Length: 375
Image (cartoon, rainbow, N blue to C red; front, side, top):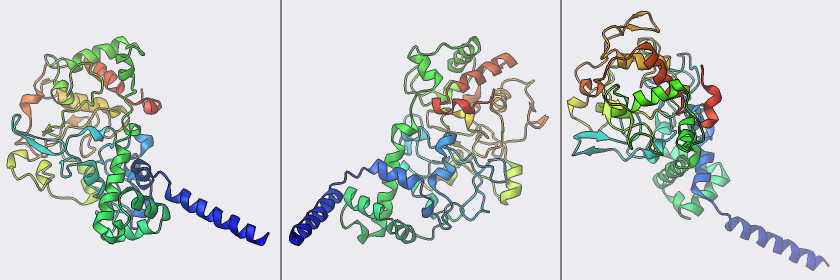
């Protein structure tokens, strides 16, 4: 009887080992766990999801003491000088490159495209001293080793001897996060606009007017940079992934808190770019979920979506000379010399057309975030 029990225990152990060895580890599942893991920051207070909150359009919706204009680091005091771009729909951005035909830089991640891919982007924050603050790749790998699931999954998905190299483990971690960001969770294409294209939603009169204005190059400049596939094409991400300077002013309120004094040179911060003509240019962001991801522009200088639309109109409407948020004239651009004036040319808009454009932009909100829209 005792022998039978020992045999049963042995068989159970073998079965358990067989089960563990046969576990179907998937990179996107591993990436999801990593995306939410605060243990990968120095003080164990910050994860990818902290600055790319899935409940807030994959942006940083914390106040951070500066009205959400930039992110606060793991140390509880460091502040960036730019907003964390939304991770939603980011998988569609092509690798950073120079388009010889257009003579323009296109794609990449971050506002200046300094990382070519999502994996490259994922590898940046953990080692950034004002973000997650880890001192080295080895420190990150040591944190990964604390979690038996990570160890098993990384060995299963990538290679049994992966932990022989900290660089390989770190790269695998970034690729796993990338694979999670490639899932439908980040890009559901289920907004009212998408449902309209599938005959599942009827536009209001104002929304339909906004749609007509948005896609009309004769009336407005929106489509010049924020349409890639064409009018009413399914799967539109509402960005052409180019880089432009639209004359955004410096955010003085943010700078007073973060202590930054130098000019943000935009695309010139990308180590692969040395052309001075790219100074002050930033990647055209997706307009998906734009209605629920305030504040706006790369530095969070505008609080309201309508302000942004009025800001664009000021280039063509001499009467649109007051910032509605301050009651004062628009501030000067941080970088004046490279503004994309040709792309910004359009007919002036009246207040009803401005309202219509805002109504259309609200249509681009994923279904899960529609409750966040402020009327």
